[in-house]
Image 1: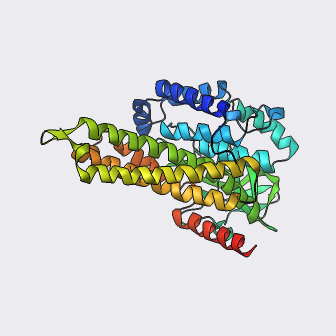
Image 2: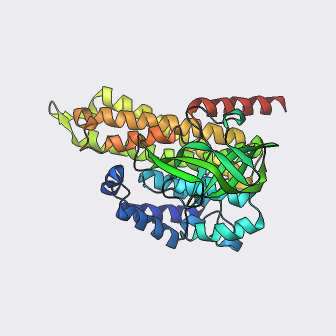
Image 3: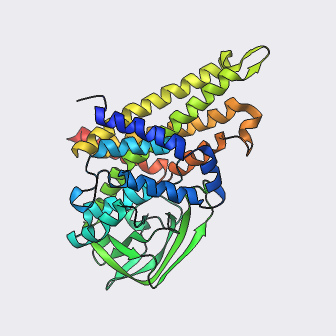
Length: 369
């Protein structure tokens, strides 16, 4: 096993970091808290022009090829910059569902448009509070039409289409719905991180096309496993940036004639964060390997990466605020941006309990083999 990313992936990481440092400053993230700024839409178009939206998608359908490694590298850098773009919901969930489970006609119709940034997609699974499960899906698909309410739906207000989980006569399925079509009503939802807007999406006999490869809960759970890996990298990127911000402030802020980073209460706290981040990095890299190879270890690796990365991001974001002291809690300081994103990502694909239970179930399966 190679424990380092390829030269091409490291080059992509460096290019992405430079690009996002210039195009996605903290001011853009702040502007997105109140409304979707034009710069965020422009950033998405530029990402499409760079081929980022097609990474990991088939070249035959407009994708950039490459693979899971490149997708994870981009997710980490976007997470590091707290980019207010629908990368996780649009590329890692909805587009992945079409690529993995869609018919050839559905793939040909939508993947080129999604890769080019000409259309955006959302993934609608949740129907209120609670973790994903077959019984939590109450929306119904009958005779090519969906009835039900999905909330929260990431990027549901702006997306052109949605991949919606519903029940049909055989159990849970996924279906494509035109969000601008008849029978669809959307309302914005207030979230802890408004820079990634969410919506309440209600379907009343909305026309839908079933994804033929997504029959049964296992198919939906497999998509969640695949999305959990880039989601873990997004959390890892945010955790790394929050730790670096805290360390930089601890070096420049002085109290009692010395940098506050020289006090044990600060240095030990940041050392603990560093250990958590590096542990999450190891787990994320292994999950990336499993995703790239489509290995049987993916369910366990993905759940482990998601649990450890979310925990590291929360710890880093919390201690970043504490290191900044009183100013860290204010609107004018940037640490709260990381805290908001950490809380949102921790529940993006199901809460911590859901992923811990998946991790334990995968461990039991592996031990029984």
